Length: 225
Image 1 (cartoon, rainbow, N blue to C red):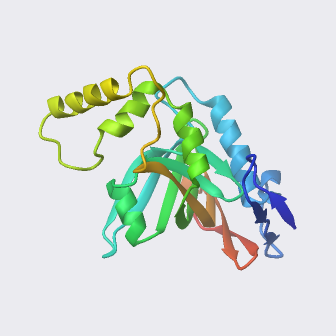
Image 2 (image 1 turned 90 degrees about the vertical axis):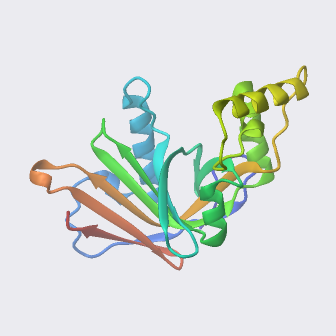
């Protein structure tokens, strides 16, 4: 079945079928949902139940690796979720961007401790469209827009004063006008081929549900904790 992605102007997406083992032992009705729908339900509950800042339901650990397989991880804010994948934004010269360029496989792990639930997502990373990056950049506070120009992300910094001087430079350059998006800054989309949903249980006998995409099917299974 063909369905359109959740945001206006985005390309159509083929919605895969879900196949389940005959005996899954699944006790929660939510497990019957497709993985994207299941994630959005969980994402919504995390947003509603989130404690005061700094807790943020958008936060996830992004793991990447370079061409030699050396891994790195950092927390990012996932700013878009649709039927194509998970969108985050960064400087295209940052370490994570360089690693994605040389090895486009990555993973995200959301841990909503206030729900005692996690969601893990793995898949291929591609660049978001220019239109998506432009739209998100326009939504950012002006200080963050200036910061995107000023920061040579992941490059050596001689002193805090050097960064402050670059911020002042771009404040003067864009004074009295809209700050455009730098060409070196924009979005990436992780397109999942694997979801895992984890829920805490007593005696560390946690509930783990896996969805693995094979061709146009999502294959659902349960994992030992």
